[in-house]
Length: 396
Image (cartoon, rainbow, N blue to C red; front, top):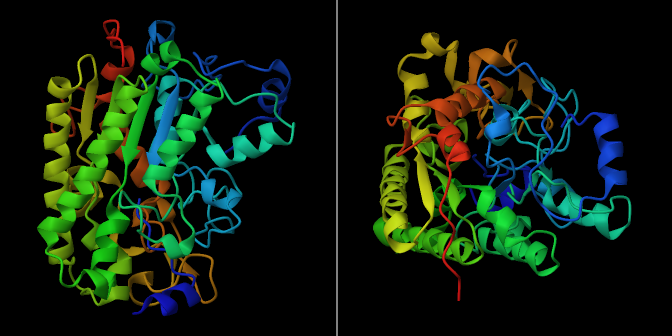
C-alpha cells in the first residue's frame, strides 16, 4: 500500500483525562511559578502507593509516540494522525482525549501510582498559557509525545507529527522561559518510548529497500543516544527508556503485506535488534553520564507473555483489534467509516489496529512500576522515584 492510499484511508501508523473541574480551577488561579513537586492526588484507589510523603520524584516528562501521547496531536492543526473522535477514550474518560486507546495509557497509570494528576499535552499547555486561560504550566510535568512520530526526524513527516528532536526543543523552550529549574529537573522522572513507527515505516517505504536493516536500526539508536545526552546536559538524572513491543504482531501488519495468521517475523527481528541496542545504551549511561540513573523497561517481553498465556492475564483475543475493520480489524482505523466494535474491550490485547487496550496498558504499567528485573532493570520505576541521588556535577 502506498503512502497516498494510507493517507486517504485515515491510516495512522503508530504504536505505541479526566481532570476534575475543581482541580482545573485551582490550576488556573494558583499560578505555580515553575515545575516542582506536585500536590498529591486524591485518587486513593491505587494499592501500589506506599508513603508518598517520602517520594522524591513527583514530576514527569514524557517523550515519544502514541504509546505515551496524551493528546498533543489534537492541538496540532497540521497533523492528520488523530484519535480525537469516538470511540477513543470511551472506557475511562467517556470521551476522546487524543489518546490512541479506549482509556488510560502507561504514563497515566504511573501518574496514579505516584499520586499525581495526569500530565497535560505540551501543545495544550502552551496554548492555554499563551492565551491567558492558564497563568502557568502545570506543576506535575508535561507530556511531549506525539502519535505517529519516530526517533528519526523524517518518520511520518507527511502526517505533520512532532518528531523526538522537536519534542526535545519544546522541553528546552520551557527551560529557556524559566518554567522550570535545575533542581526540579533533577528530581523529575523522564520517560521515552519511540521507534515503532520508524520500523513500521521501513517496511512501508520503498526508499529504505536498499538500506540494510542493521544500518537503519543503528541510525535509530544514534538518535536515542543524542536525545539522552541532551537531557543529561539539561539536568535530567532519572530516565526510563521503554523497549518497543512486538510491532510485527499488531493487526496493522496486514496493511503492508504482513501475514494474517502469524506475526511478521522480519519486522519483529528489527524490533528485537533495536531493543537490544536500547538496553545496551541504558547499561552505558551510568558510565558515560555521572550521577544519571537509567532503567530499561522490557515491554516486548511483557506483551509476549500476554500472547503465550492470554487467559492468565484476562485476554480472550490477542490477535485482532477490538475496534476497527477488515482483516484482523487492522485495515480500518477505529472510529472511521466501516469500523466495528468488539463486545468486551478488556478481553482484547489490541484496542485498534496498532495500540493496546487500557487493560493491557494497566498490566504493562504494573510490571514497570513494581516489576522484577525480568521486566524492568536494573530497578523498577517505583525504586527510581524514591531513590536519593547525589548532587549533580556542574554542567559546562
